Image 1: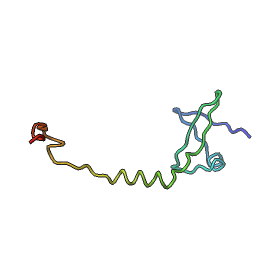
Image 2: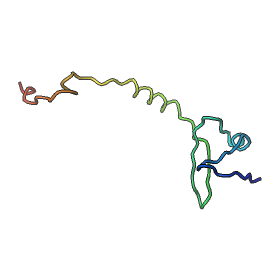
Image 3: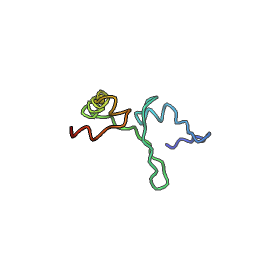
Image 4: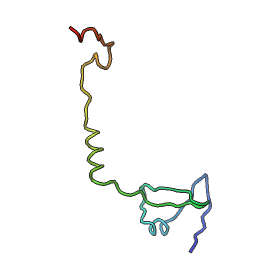
Amino acid sequence: MPIRRRVHAGQVYLGREVLGALGIRDGDEVELEIKDGEAVIRPVKAIDKDTLDLIRLLGEVKASGGREDYFEEYDYEDISG
């Protein structure tokens, strides 16, 4: 059964009934797709455990090197001895 809503400032209030039917809760991320002149909204799929582990690992990686590697001009002639 179609539900009518009014657009206000570019936003549409969907309501608890619509969100509940889609399995969407307050604060969830959704995907919006325009298909043949119609909007399709769906919840974003959960991130799998391996991807979460990779994100955590990348967040823990610390840069290595000394001050000259980041803040001073490097003397490349010094490398050859």
